[in-house]
Length: 357
Image (tube, rainbow, N blue to C red; front, side, top):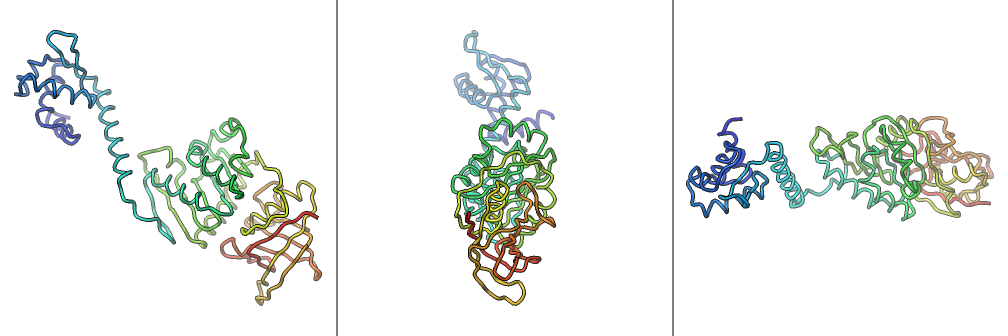
């Protein structure tokens, strides 16, 4: 880069022509007196002091007032570049804060490149969750959503978390209380994309390292549509979640409890039956064939079919259902709130109440 290019770059960073002249005079000599700078820049010596203060604030020079006469010394190139880069970073942050960001899409997809925008999308999704959060997140990025997950747990939501990456196990080992952040925690040393979905409706899918790489080629997709979320969730719960090893599981929740997200009710039943507890279910169901509606009360839960919490009991990857005993025999019930609805079970339910016998 020649002198002309250096001057153009200095101008781009907001230096005036005289400030650039003064800096070039110092840079070419390593150090220079105020008189030398005054002559090179064609300004008065009194004005040199103002220029020196401006250059020092930008991290380009140091001013040695203990010397007689006062000397300006050019900072080493790597320090000067770092200083300018810091100003550029501050500028970027200010622009991002001032930018009147378009509203998040209500449906479909929104492609995102900025890590800061990805963080905001995650914050909004997690803050609006009302029933359930499912998160596959690199351990190196966990701190970004840790508080939001803890808040979800404190609000009574079911939270599932798979920590991924080489540091996943060590990161989990350093946690004082994994249950503060999730009811089920798994780890895997793979590097799948970050995936967070709330209530089976909306969420974010992003390249693995987007939150730790400020300026990279990463991208993310934010979505707010039941069918879209269902498709993503089906893929990740089938192909990525099973790769993790369960490291933590919370105690069974207090019963009776009603779950508007059917999947959460299945998990609650799984935790209780694994603990050796007998549970029953109250359900308002609709027949998948024919559309008949009926109410099932105090039906003993005979089987829990799922793969979100160990031991895994599903027969196919995305199966999430209860088999309950009714006066007409055993009935399999799937969740209508899971996106595309049951397509293997006999009955569909929007919510379920689980009780101990």
